[in-house]
Each structure stands twice: as structure tokens, then as C-alpha cells.
Length: 55
Image (cartoon, rainbow, N blue to C red; front, side):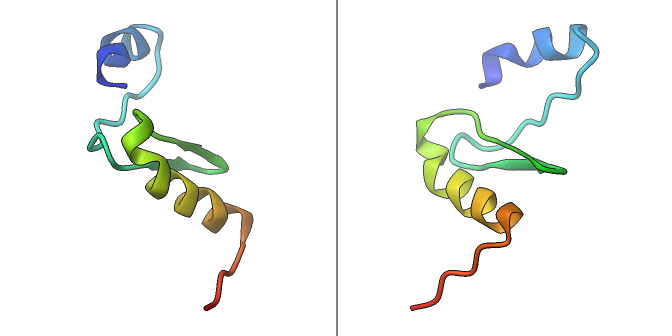
């Protein structure tokens, strides 16, 4: 969530400024800024798990 960016940086973390409907992957950590990113977050999460979805 964009509002926590300064706090993350002050705490020594790296804030990733992704779109409100985007997701960010760092190793096995998958995160997103807010509920509009649920589809992107879920897709990245399944990718990290190695899941393959076929029609």
C-alpha cells in the first residue's frame, strides 16, 4: 500500500512502487498493494508454487 512506503524505507526495507492492480515477487514472497491486485497477486502466487493451470 503506497502510504506505508516511507515507513518501510525508514525501517530498512525496500519499497516496491507497483501499480494498485499489480503484484510484486521477491523470492517466495508475493505481495500486492490492495484488493484491486487480487488477480495479479493470485497469478504470481500460483507461479511461485509451480502450479500450471490449463484450459
